Image (cartoon, one colour):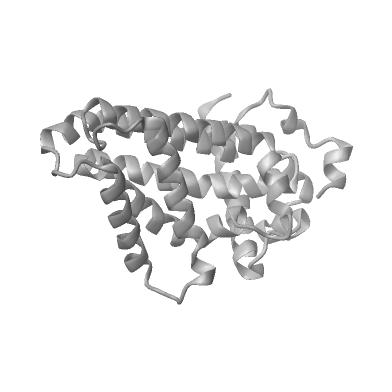
Length: 251
């Protein structure tokens, strides 16, 4: 595919993703329709299907574009300041980025059984696998430079970090309203005490680990970008010819 054609497809995809995002924010719900997205973007319904095969696929693309930007920011932060690779610094940034992107919560938050359908979507499975691989690479890089607490298996750290982060996100509806910075600081404090060396590691260790860490998050951002734009940019994709009749009935 020519670069100009790819760029045109991605610009059109961005316009449709912008339309879907604005509708999600207005409705405060995932229950938007393809027709609404097309009308908001000023195109026909069939144009949406040239990019994504169903409403669930479109919703995942909306979330994936946000996630890609989030992980690009993480990679850039680690490149600029290697200490940002520390788990407590990374998860603090991740938490703040996520809560400041309300579209992410609308796409991936729990809502009336819809999340099950999104979780089973092949595109979601692909990015979940990419995220797991990136997390393992990230923790392996930290472990190789003694940036995790001694005696901990990276697999156990992976589980612990996921559980702690999930708890901070999930607790919000049950807690008094607090400033995101405050919650992010509490998350960072828990992570630092539980998973990082008692004594602050030397800066050189972070500097040596930073390129591998940044590469892991850059790769993860690219995986999310493929979910957001892959169909639009791939002439050979079956979805480029539109959805099947069964897929149309589900939207």
